[in-house]
Length: 538
Image 1: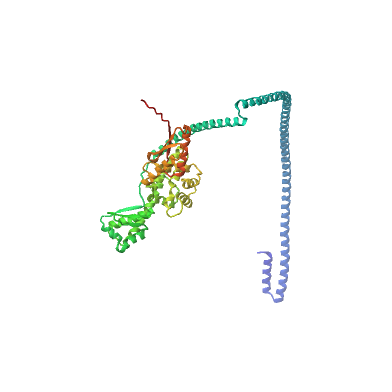
Image 2: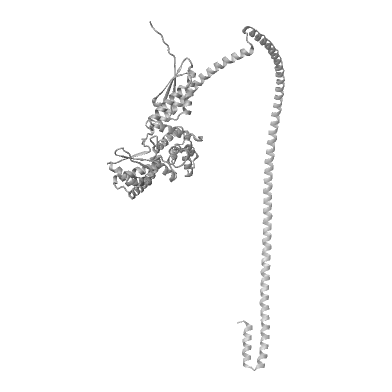
């Protein structure tokens, strides 16, 4: 317990034992004594602490002085060492600079010596040139004198020729130029003929090899269909049931399918007609199921048509996916795959458009591989080239433009593919080699025997137009279409044209055929020029 508190406790006890004034006096004395004792004790403690703090401060001050001296000495040593290293570095750099400067001076001295030598050579050449200039001037003077003499002699010869030939200079020049022009034209036609024949022979050989390879590596079957589908019935009574009371059944079929049902006198057949191949298929299959089921009434018709629609839509998706897998095409939008499936029900000149697209894709790949191009891109271009035919009956315009816009809207970003789709019939300029490749593959697929069909009337009309067009050419005596219209043979009068002119006639006929006629594949123009020699023996 602190001493002050002990004294206060003792004073309180004394006060409790004494009277009031005695207690007060004793308390006052105790407080004074306790305060004095506390002051002396506190002073003693504070003095001890101050002395201790002074001693510690002196120790810290002495230690700091010692460390400062040591740091100063170390800094001086480091500065001296750094100064020595810097001086050594500077001396080394100075030595290197002196060495480089000496090398530069030596090099400049050598250049100066070389320039002096070159200056001497230039001086020699200038003197040589002055000498040659004098020689040339002398020769020019001599040539001028000789030219003057030649001009004089030429005037004399010209006057003598005019006197002998009775022709002026202009007339003689015109005759000479006309003769030279005729000779030049004949030689040019002959040279052009030989060059073109050689180029055509080489191109024909290469193209034939590529085309034959493409055709041999791929062959496809084609399904021939038209805009009318026939449904067989077992009895003529079924026609009446299909028509229904007051025609309600046939109207229900036409309303549900969007196709025309033709019931005529043809025995055992009911025909379905529609320009939309999908609706035609739905109507034909629905009518076939109704005939087989035997129950023909409006509610049953709607049920059957809905079932057939679902089945056809599923077949469209399956056909599109199967073709995409067959051609190994990736990244096609589902709408494009569905449009490909619709092409299964579309025909062109009796040729199934989907199989035609697959064939064009394969042919395009083979041709591109032979030419060193990317076969995968060519295959993609060939498969999509006729995709516009899947909706050309719904959208106004030609199928190339429709197909290009459809592919662009559905995520096709490759401009090469879009140009091939839109330009395979030359509707837009070709911007890549894949477009003419697709055009060639399309022509091969459509022109090979059995691929397409055309009516006899159109066939005969095309042959007559071909023969008439060839017969309009000058010097043509006869023209015959042969090889089922694949070749036109033209016989010209040998007395009115030469062999080179017959070559030009063949080109003009071919150009007119390309401009004025529409035909599948290609037509060969053969011009025959023969001289008949006749004699009579008696």
